Each structure stands twice: as structure tokens, then as C-alpha cells.
Amino acid sequence: MKKTVYIRFTIILLIVGFMLAVQYNTVQNPETRDTRDIWAIRQELSKETETHSELLSEVYMLDQTILKYGNKVSESAAFALEDTVVQLKEDIGLVDYTGPGLTIKVEPSLESIALGQPIEGISPDLLIRLINEINRFKAKDIEVDGKRIIYSSPIRDVNGKTTVNNIPVRNAPFTIRIGTSTYDEAQKMYNQLEASTIGDDFYIDNLKLKIGEPEQIIRISAYDQPVNNHFLKEVPEGES
Image (cartoon, rainbow, N blue to C red; front, side):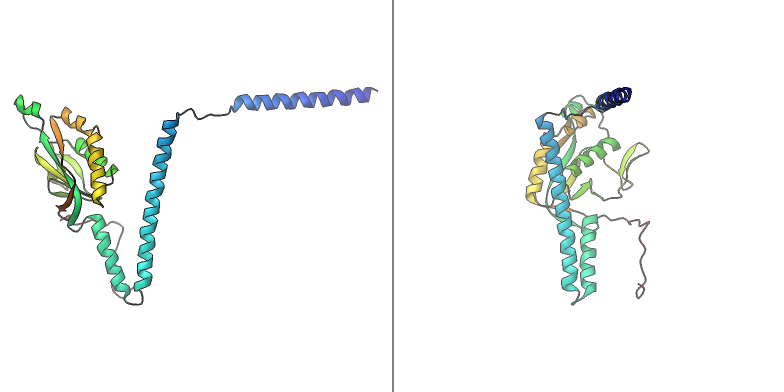
């Protein structure tokens, strides 16, 4: 009789202990809920969709390059390689650009002119922010005051003067030219820049942005300085 009582008491204790353990785990690890509103979630989804689209475009371009090699290998592998080198030079900015885009003029603000304030040069931080904003809207090529921007272009303050590619940028007014992949992209960039708040930052520095209408043809000169290669080495002909 006592043995049966002990068994029942042990079973009851096991059940109670299991219930307490489950309750403790629930308190320690509450279920997290997404408290964002529907618009925030839709914006996040839109960004992810755009990123996915860009990745698919890059994959398509790589597939086309591989297909090009396969089609031309019987004709001339050297020709296919040369074609790829030309494309890479265009992507980097080592050749002149002619195509759709738009022009931005950086001018002194009307207030600074009316008050007779001295015209100051654009600061490196403000110029970098503008270029980042332009790149965010998918610019293909950029030229600042006649200086081509590439992946390694330094923008810094040298003796109180803003420089691009180690060449000083003139005080306002000066011009920024932007190349895009298509005319539609230029139109889209124009609308986005018009709606951007970047112009407010220029007013603080007594400058203003005058964004020109999209154009079918603009010209941007090639990068005209040596390109430093720290990791690539030329293989002598005949070696593999």
C-alpha cells in the first residue's frame, strides 16, 4: 500500500516539475512579435526585391560574358579577352563616356550673393555626401569639375582646398556631369535628386544645386591619371 502511494506521489511531482519547467522557459523566452507597421514592412520588402533584381542583372551579365567566350573560343580567345578588357575599362572609367545623363551646377546661393558674403569652396564632406547620393540612384559615370571619379578617386582637404584626384576643385560655380545606363534612368535620377534633401545641406554652406533636365547625350572625359594596381600582376607572354 505504501509503495503505491509513493509511486503516485512521485508521478505527481514529475508532472508538477514538468509544468514549472515549461512555464519558466516561456517566461525566459517570450515570443517576439514584429511591431513594424505595414508600410515599413512593404518598404523593406521593396528594398529586398530591388536588391534581388540587381543580383539577377549581374548574374545575367556574367552569363552573357561566359556565353561570349564560348561562342568566340573557336574563332579567337584573344579577341574575346580583348573585348572583355574594353568593357572593364568602360566600367572603371578609363575611356570617354558618351550617352544619356544629366548635369548639376553648384552655384553660390542667392542669399550669399545679396549679402556680399565671400564664396567658399565646397567641403570634402559635402562633396562626398553628394556623390554617395548620386551613386545611390545608380549613376554609371561621374565627373566633378572636369575630374573623372573612379573607384580609387580620393576626395580630401589639402591646405584648406577640396581636391579630387589630387586636383583642386574650383569655388562655385562648377559643374558635375552624371552618366546613366539609359535615358529613363537619367529621368528617374532627376526626379530623385529633386525630391532629395541634399540641397538643404548645400544651402547651409551658402551653395545651391541646379539640377539640369535629363539629356540623351552628355560627354564625360576619361580618367587621365595612372591607376594603381596593388594586387594584379601582368603575366609575361607565354607563361600560364
